[in-house]
Figure 1 (cartoon, rainbow, N blue to C red):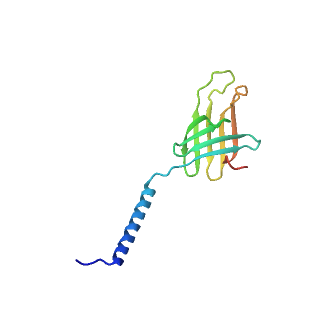
Figure 2 (tube, rainbow, N blue to C red):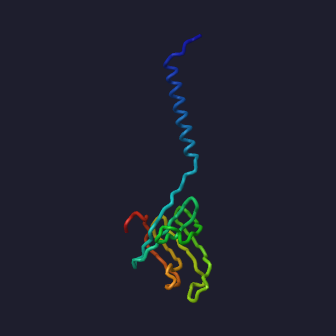
Figure 3 (cartoon, rainbow, N blue to C red):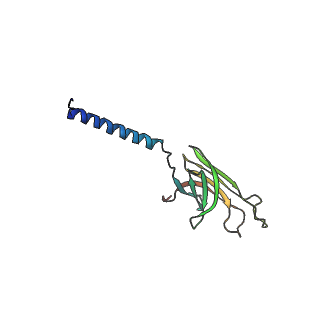
Length: 142
């Protein structure tokens, strides 16, 4: 029986190690990427603001209330350039309430400009509230 040299075994081990590393990298690339959930604050020139949360995996946009939960959740159309949503809400039937309440808006992902419209949280105010202006991550200041 011929004895194998240490050099041959070392080359074989290195080649196997490289193949295993390459296979591992390919498996990681094949796994679906988990898109992040982003919370944005959109600020109007007059000082009003609205907070939205975009879930890229679920393709939804939430209007976030002061407690941090979703006041409204709308299905969204997400492209490389923008996010758009439009959710019709049931009418409250109250006098002076909007005839067709809705939570809708859009976000330009390149410029950061947002447009959001939603029913007033304050029932006494009635009607819709709106914010048009720049949107930033909730952790950033304007």
